Image (cartoon, rainbow, N blue to C red; front, side, top):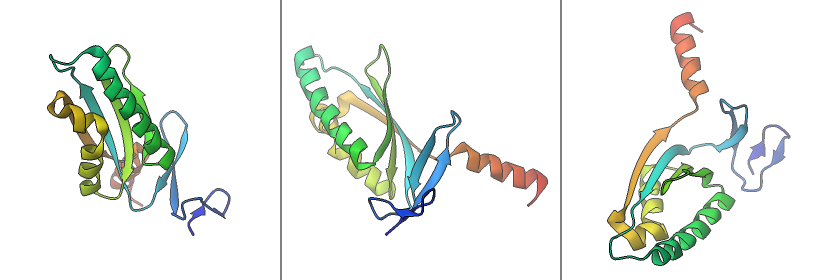
Length: 139
């Protein structure tokens, strides 16, 4: 089983985890051998769809999203105030898994081209900063 480095106790998924502290000082666990993605979803209401129909689909999506959070695939999830936009950070094994995950979402399946997505592979800024330090100052 994987070990939680802070307590030397196997974690519940049996996956080795890395620790990352973000710029706000919050500590998050990252699974080894995963790629983090920042994904933006912009949802557009089709002209022939009522608000009630849209929100019924969005409720189904919200339940699926909570399941992904509970499973540890989605590590951060935000709804943009005043817009029909959602930001998510996902931990997935590879790029193909991101494609599959997005295509499996209820909101994508039911609204199709009425949902614009933008996905970016990301990494902790602290890793980049350390690379810059080594480049400038050496080991």
